[in-house]
Image 1 (cartoon, rainbow, N blue to C red):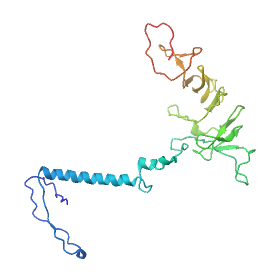
Image 2 (image 1 turned 180 degrees about the vertical axis):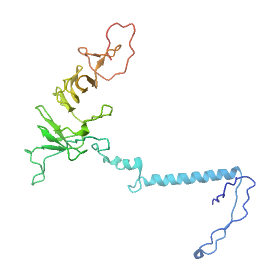
Image 3 (image 1 turned 135 degrees about the horizontal axis):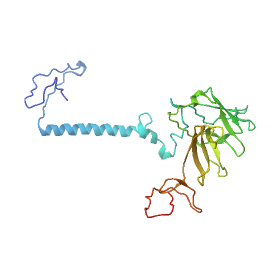
Image 4 (image 1 turned 120 degrees about the vertical axis):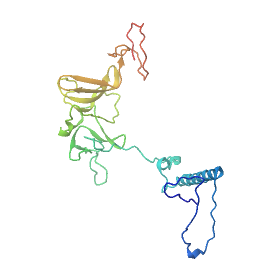
Length: 279
């Protein structure tokens, strides 16, 4: 039993217990005889520490035992339930809308189901839903819905001209100082040459046409390379996912014939080396 020390009294050898007024016992249990034993010194401190650790270990044991029950499991233990049986707990889920989302097209739209509950194979989706703005829709031209996607259904595009277009809106007119993230989950065809994935631009390779585009194609001599281009109508900037650079100047270089591109680490240029090097 712990007796709290009232006020700001210091615990010293001068502290003395002069009175103890317990609550009256419950009459259903009769009178209980008890006594108070005060332990002082290092032995008392050691016993207090041992008793506290015993309670912590006992509580931890109860908590570990409870992790096998879905009603009492928590944290990582809850996620691991069923792992030994190979049961997936949390399959991948598509992105959700947050306050900073301008547009979000999952492209998991499918044609309406027929009387048998299955969409007609000859039907095709004409409009796709924007999860960030349900009133805004995209128009499907040549895209094939119902394909297997990363999370559920997906759209297939190409090799013929196929795309989803969305009308321009004030929400797309970001100020020059605003941050912008463009993200897309795609699987490119090995026979595909160059094509836009997401773009807000009429002509992808025209500097005078202001806008931006995220494109996959053969750039810097690398197949299925990713390029992001941005133009204000007079100046155009480009960044790529992979390319060769001169070890001294940092300028892009065409790959050498027969070079197999793999991930590497930066190398310090050799001052005595005169030939053009690659990173």
